[in-house]
Image (tube, rainbow, N blue to C red; front, side):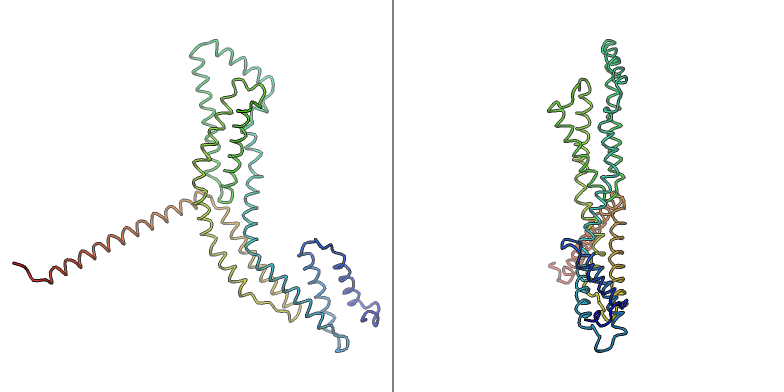
Length: 322
């Protein structure tokens, strides 16, 4: 009706265009897409309301739209646990993307050996077998050195892993170990020959590393949860006490910017926590446990001494039998 009364009015045309644009969105479009469009529409409506008279006021429509925008913004703030979970998932995925190709190349390095190198290796193996026990011992020493280097590579990876990447590395190493074990048992690799020791050795090393360092996975999760607890408490308190103003567009934008700043700060703190070396967090946890144990032992000793002193005082208060 307003557009019919003032055809071509820039503010009314902009409002109509935004309404048509929102109407064209698919029902499965992201909620933030609708929310951004509604906030732009709300801004245009407030611009019209600033110069409108009582007869041309659209205040009831503005109030309804502002209530919808505020409800969606509250939903965004109350979804802070999902933001922190997503930060941990991104750290996990980033760790896999960063290391997967290199680990695959290490585990399957023989696949890139050219045929001439393979032939030379076969000739050397034949010469070694013909040379006698000394050559066999030398070959065994070379294999042991190779496996030791393989072990050092993967152990160094775990010792230097970040808190957010530790479980990802364990999962990847466990996957490679299972792959190698299945391939050896099923005889999938053609022409394995005297390279069987390599696959079995790799699988055994990976399996044992995962078994040993896997025991630190749960303590590391608890350490991360303890460090993350203050961030979660602050975000929970902010979500509970957040105030939203719909007096005008500027007030609404300030409320939104405050909420975004708080959420971004919380996510950034969690990301920084996940970038801390896992060994640092584990050592801090173990030192804290040792300190707690020492404090408990000191308290127990002090209590025992106090009890002994009290008993002595009670004994002194009684008259001597003699």
